[in-house]
Image (cartoon, rainbow, N blue to C red; front, side, top):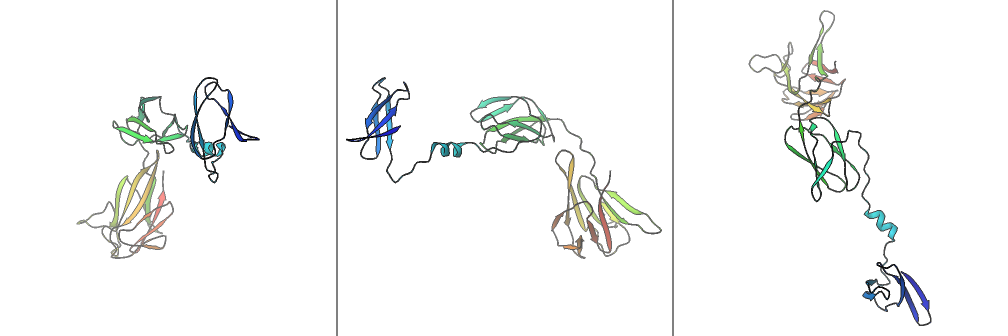
Length: 257
């Protein structure tokens, strides 16, 4: 739409969206919506005149604002073909394997959608974080994770070897040796340690890794991790090389094969 000045005022040149031909009209003197018929094909054209103090954004700005946000690409295999089930929902016919990472490419915005199934046989629905498009699929089978690499090591000296115990998946309680209230890992010769002093929770993290979280169960005597006291019911994430002090015993959290 062009504005043309002449002796009688201002004229507008409009282009028809049907026949793409142009024609001139006198510019309305007040804001509002006005309808004109194309003199070439009689197609109705609506003209919206804005007040002078209202500034419309440039077409380039509107296009940039409306464009979907581009997300980083995901390094994972693409899972199956997408089949539209209903508006905004796609089904994936190919079954995934649990605990394996996959991705799908959203057909609406083009972004990658991460898939990491953790259950077998149930319908799983993931959504695109950019546009909200849903993807429904199922997973089957199990993936055998390797054994946890975290272990505890304590004791040792000139006349005896240090004792090393691998941590199992799930909850591992640690405390002094006691037959009436045994812990999963019992340490002898330290009466200042509670019978069930701390718990280390081992959880699968990703496809082939684990996380180790220490939680204090009892605080009759202080518990320290790397020299920092840990209070009752407080939790801390362990890293290889950390030192745990229970009673008089220093325990190293190490990585083993």
